[in-house]
Length: 161
Image 1 (cartoon, rainbow, N blue to C red):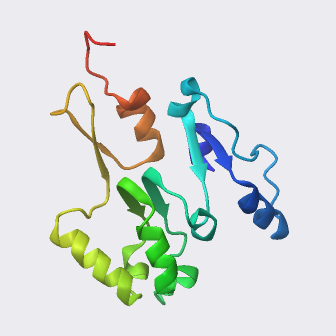
Image 2: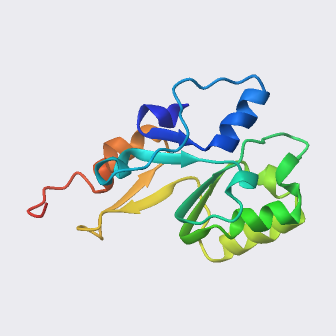
Image 3: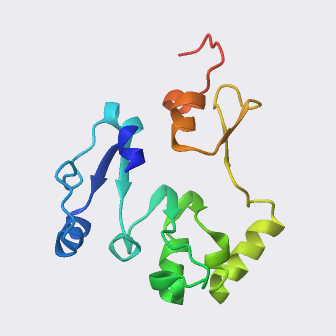
């Protein structure tokens, strides 16, 4: 897990149980602990769509794991799963994955068309520093977060804390 090199990964009990049933043991991951203020910048919660149902987050990052020439989306081909997926974010959502595979599902095809129409589709994430909003950083690789946006800011000299 590449993100585990940068963030403290937390996984809920239901997801840990499902991983164990599949024979995948993640000894370094524990059920979601009570987070304290100093650790929130380094914490990342991971959940399956089914186990995130009924919950919300300020920002949701969706990672598609399917990528195939047959354009078979698997589990996320059903509209109720897509609805849960698209209705959990309060302020923002990033979808990362193979759009050609996702376009094989009618509802995702409509979502992708909407994203492209509104210029919200691409091969990178654009971040900006809250103190330097004109400084735009393009993140393409997991290491780019730490290099370009350390602690959620930027690399510019700053008088503010």
